[in-house]
Length: 194
Ligand SMILES: [Zn+2]
Image 1 (tube, rainbow, N blue to C red):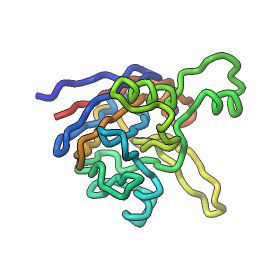
Image 2 (cartoon, helix red, strand yellow):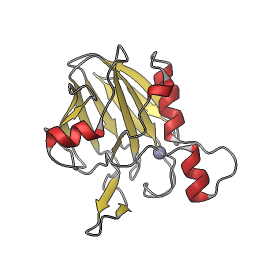
Image 3 (tube, protein in one colour):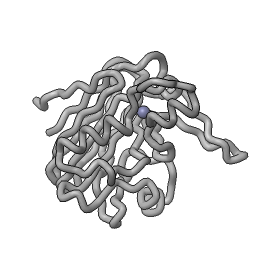
Image 4 (cartoon, protein in one colour):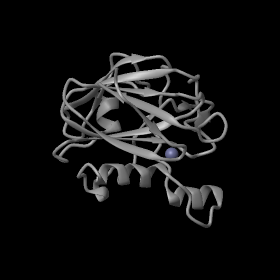
């Protein structure tokens, strides 16, 4: 039985994932989205939404699709997916985003800081973390006029997705604190590695 790691509401956590190992991302409470960032364990390659769109030929990724690195190597393959709807367009929420779009004046928990902190513990230089993570369970629609619309996530309590590592990886996972992309207040997520 794999050990379950809890990501607290608005928090983040990091883990190393050996090639061939799996990570299961679990919505343990329902309606909660998160960010996943991956680096090669040596820090040379980073998850790339652009390369992933290019090689999959689509914006919406699910079972059977591969998440690619900026150096065009496969990083993770989605091998199971209860939800089937994720976003790879939006940048991770940041302190600047909360200031500009929500008028927050003090500190606000955010996925950018949480991803950087989790990756720092795994030896990845925080300044090299890209702005766009894989926003699992986040439901975004591209409107006919090109505008983006954030819809309530389709994930329900107990839903999960499983990704297989295609190289040795450093992975960071957050439970996003933003009010717009979750169905209700920020909740916990969990992940299992095995
Ligand atoms: Zn976020």
